[in-house]
Length: 388
Image (cartoon, rainbow, N blue to C red):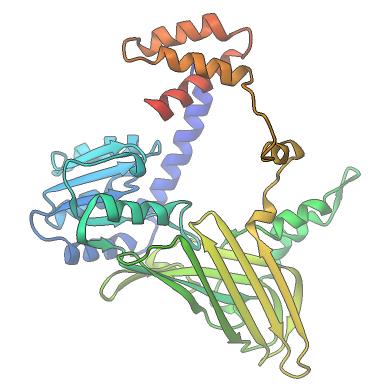
């Protein structure tokens, strides 16, 4: 019932991404190894959050860890299951396929390590996962790698990138006006690879999170910089500087990418704006757990004092249909559709006594009139993954 094409495409993407992480991220892994060697004491227990291929679990064992709980909720767990057994540490690494929020461990760990970086902070729910693991899975006062992270911003002149990501929607294609979609593009975080020459001022830290002490999922800050040269402001370059341990850092800022080779973020503004050397540029950032992001850019001309302000948010790039909004009305009365009714009946079949093959046969016999075999296969896979 499973689509081989779907599985093949997923595996190709997984292999490409982890090949990049394992072989093309500069000195990142060397720096993690040094940080783990500084944090781990012989006999320690370690939680590896978002373990992926398991490489940090291996580095933790090399640093002296007695036991590593490698937690991974994506299909990358299959890669860890393939690679970890080839190492001398296979008996010390326990691979757990689950969301970290949903598990408990037989013991609290001494050290938490997590490489859940994104272009401008942590991945979606990455901060929540770090804080939850710190509070539930690690001993009070346990050591955390990374220790802290700074979000940094800089005004950017990036004409080609702006044209390709934003103004490409200012055209008509076969009598279809694409302009309305530009509003989505200008409120989207775009991965980018800029150079220091693209920046109108050096990167400046705008906020910092200390993973040992943080309690809020909201990161916010405001910084004021001065344009060091004339140019055209197209948006904000956003990046991170992560302190893994004392004096051991990785960064994705332009010019620093040799320590991670991660892309950074480009946050466009509504309209490119000419600026002169000496102009004041204020940047405000609000980020919520890698899911929602708002950026406000205010430019004040040094000579005339004229001010322009641009406000953007990723929420505005979400395409919500009228039907989706209607379903959020407190007066809306939801009911089960064909798929939901089938899923309800399917859950009753997953009782610990039937095999997947038996459930497949039941599903084909009872569900083919309402759902296609392909949709039934997807329903079964998703239900087992979520509920088993």
